[in-house]
Length: 137
Image (cartoon, rainbow, N blue to C red; front, side):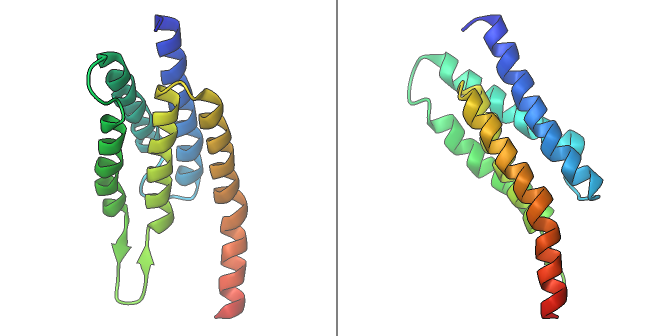
């Protein structure tokens, strides 16, 4: 893999993380701009390392990323006596890591399409969900 390919994959991961993080930041959620960028870059880096090792099963590292990201997601979830909050942020962290893995694995179209779909869900379905909740309360 060339240095240019490595830089492209890392920049794509950072860009995807920035887009998701910006949406979370604008909504004042706990995992915002920098956090999402770092999650995507970290996932991309681990994937690049695992594919560059040349020994063993390269799917093991992405599998461990999923487990590790679960801890970050769990930290974003808050429970009170009446509500559970942070589920969307936790899910965004999880998807963001997957997008970073896709970028690191060279699946650039997959990362871009996945990011676009995720942004659509966050931007379009959030207001729709709130509207439904107000009508059912």
